[in-house]
Image (cartoon, rainbow, N blue to C red; front, side, top):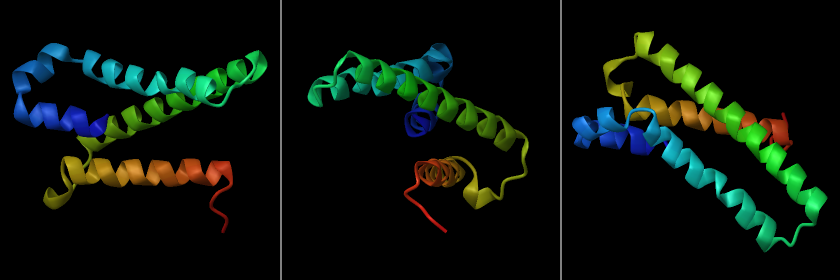
Length: 109
Protein backbone atom coordinates (compact mmCIF):
# COMPACT_ATOMS: atom_id res chain seq x y z
CA UNK A 1 0.00 0.00 0.00
CA UNK A 2 2.79 2.36 0.97
CA UNK A 3 4.75 1.40 -2.15
CA UNK A 4 1.81 2.03 -4.50
CA UNK A 5 1.05 5.32 -2.76
CA UNK A 6 4.63 6.61 -3.05
CA UNK A 7 5.11 5.33 -6.59
CA UNK A 8 1.97 7.03 -7.85
CA UNK A 9 2.89 10.25 -6.04
CA UNK A 10 6.28 10.30 -7.84
CA UNK A 11 5.16 9.14 -11.30
CA UNK A 12 1.80 10.87 -11.69
CA UNK A 13 1.16 13.58 -9.04
CA UNK A 14 -2.03 14.76 -10.76
CA UNK A 15 -3.64 11.32 -10.55
CA UNK A 16 -2.33 10.91 -7.01
CA UNK A 17 -4.10 14.07 -5.83
CA UNK A 18 -7.28 13.23 -7.77
CA UNK A 19 -7.52 9.78 -6.17
CA UNK A 20 -6.64 11.11 -2.72
CA UNK A 21 -7.80 8.80 0.05
CA UNK A 22 -9.41 6.42 -2.44
CA UNK A 23 -6.01 5.01 -3.47
CA UNK A 24 -5.48 3.66 0.03
CA UNK A 25 -9.05 2.33 0.15
CA UNK A 26 -8.66 0.50 -3.17
CA UNK A 27 -5.45 -1.16 -2.04
CA UNK A 28 -6.90 -2.05 1.36
CA UNK A 29 -9.98 -3.62 -0.22
CA UNK A 30 -7.73 -5.90 -2.26
CA UNK A 31 -6.09 -7.08 0.96
CA UNK A 32 -9.43 -7.61 2.69
CA UNK A 33 -10.67 -9.78 -0.19
CA UNK A 34 -8.09 -12.37 0.89
CA UNK A 35 -10.17 -13.28 3.97
CA UNK A 36 -13.09 -14.89 2.09
CA UNK A 37 -10.59 -16.68 -0.12
CA UNK A 38 -8.88 -18.11 2.98
CA UNK A 39 -12.26 -19.19 4.36
CA UNK A 40 -13.06 -21.06 1.16
CA UNK A 41 -9.60 -22.55 0.75
CA UNK A 42 -9.48 -23.91 4.33
CA UNK A 43 -13.12 -25.13 4.40
CA UNK A 44 -13.94 -23.25 7.60
CA UNK A 45 -17.37 -23.63 9.19
CA UNK A 46 -19.59 -20.64 9.98
CA UNK A 47 -18.17 -19.90 13.44
CA UNK A 48 -14.56 -20.19 12.25
CA UNK A 49 -15.33 -17.91 9.30
CA UNK A 50 -16.90 -15.27 11.54
CA UNK A 51 -13.96 -15.43 13.94
CA UNK A 52 -11.42 -15.13 11.13
CA UNK A 53 -13.35 -12.24 9.58
CA UNK A 54 -13.62 -10.28 12.82
CA UNK A 55 -10.02 -10.94 13.79
CA UNK A 56 -8.73 -10.01 10.35
CA UNK A 57 -10.79 -6.83 10.31
CA UNK A 58 -9.48 -5.80 13.69
CA UNK A 59 -5.91 -6.59 12.67
CA UNK A 60 -6.17 -4.69 9.37
CA UNK A 61 -7.72 -1.72 11.15
CA UNK A 62 -5.01 -1.68 13.78
CA UNK A 63 -2.25 -1.90 11.16
CA UNK A 64 -3.77 0.93 9.10
CA UNK A 65 -4.22 3.18 12.10
CA UNK A 66 -0.66 2.58 13.27
CA UNK A 67 0.83 3.13 9.81
CA UNK A 68 -1.24 6.28 9.19
CA UNK A 69 -0.28 7.80 12.52
CA UNK A 70 3.40 7.05 11.97
CA UNK A 71 3.24 8.56 8.46
CA UNK A 72 1.73 11.72 9.91
CA UNK A 73 4.50 11.94 12.50
CA UNK A 74 7.16 11.34 9.85
CA UNK A 75 5.90 14.27 7.77
CA UNK A 76 6.64 16.57 10.70
CA UNK A 77 9.90 14.86 11.72
CA UNK A 78 13.38 15.83 10.62
CA UNK A 79 14.24 12.67 8.66
CA UNK A 80 17.80 12.57 7.21
CA UNK A 81 17.90 13.15 3.43
CA UNK A 82 18.93 9.57 2.43
CA UNK A 83 16.01 8.11 4.41
CA UNK A 84 13.26 10.43 3.16
CA UNK A 85 10.43 8.86 1.19
CA UNK A 86 10.48 5.15 0.42
CA UNK A 87 13.42 4.09 2.67
CA UNK A 88 11.82 5.35 5.88
CA UNK A 89 8.48 3.82 4.81
CA UNK A 90 10.12 0.40 4.40
CA UNK A 91 11.90 0.74 7.75
CA UNK A 92 8.65 1.64 9.53
CA UNK A 93 6.75 -1.17 7.79
CA UNK A 94 9.45 -3.67 8.79
CA UNK A 95 9.33 -2.55 12.41
CA UNK A 96 5.54 -2.83 12.47
CA UNK A 97 5.77 -6.33 10.96
CA UNK A 98 8.24 -7.33 13.68
CA UNK A 99 5.90 -5.97 16.34
CA UNK A 100 2.99 -8.01 14.97
CA UNK A 101 5.17 -11.12 14.81
CA UNK A 102 6.02 -10.56 18.46
CA UNK A 103 2.31 -10.44 19.32
CA UNK A 104 1.75 -13.74 17.56
CA UNK A 105 4.47 -15.45 19.54
CA UNK A 106 6.76 -16.16 16.61
CA UNK A 107 9.58 -14.06 18.07
CA UNK A 108 10.77 -14.85 21.56
CA UNK A 109 13.44 -12.94 23.40
